[in-house]
Amino acid sequence: MRPLGRAIASLILFIGSLGVSLRGMAEEPDPERMAREGKVFVEPTFVSTVATEGEYRLIPYGERRGRLGGTVGLSYQSYEPNDYEANFANQPYGGLYESPTLPMLELHTAFKRNFSTGSLGVELAVGRFQSETPEPEGEAEQAVAVQSTLTLTAVRLGAIYALDNMTTDPKWSPYVSAGAYVIFFNEELDSNSFSGNTLLAPYVSGGVDFPLDWLDRNAARVAYEDSGIERSSLFVEGRMLVPSSEEKDPDFGSSFSWGAGLRIEL
Image (cartoon, rainbow, N blue to C red):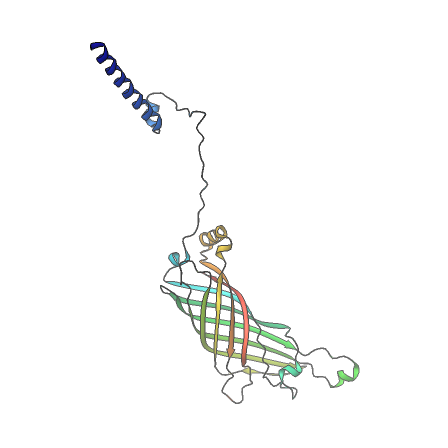
């Protein structure tokens, strides 16, 4: 029995030593300990390392935006003063002027307070519009044709409410706005001019924002880190301008006009 006992004891000792060795091979070596002992770790040729490339992304819009914010943008409007009566001819705008030489282009900005699901802000916009009568054709028509230029500068101030945080990273955001506008006008015929401004009149509009950050998230991250741009978006909207209630004011109202533009949130 003694030889059998010694054999069993030797087998147990061998298995224990093998387990310790295997555990040591599975564990990641300690660089400091190996440096003290003057050893170098060499990976076995049958082990392949896996490298992962990190992608740094912005946290969702709804989580990163602050309590206060602001936007700037540029837009095109299909607006034309179709109910305006030309000063130098007894004709309405549509009967005298053709397509605008400068369509209504607006530069706008807004300051807003962000909430859990949306935002409420104050918007200010300045737009420019110009239209000219077409060049007359033929000598007979030149003698009687009226050639004039109508230039309008529109200034709007109002409130805007947007559901721009319905989700943490929305793909679209509806909004509505309302306020008052004034138009500075100037109509010229040769050396004669008719100019002034209307009284304040109301306007209403509504539209949808379409954020663009998802198209290139790396570019969005760089824009946020370098310039503080929270997000960029395209938008489409409809607007109605109520005519001035002052009888002497020209009628620059519009029942409906559509627009589109780019908005950047800072």
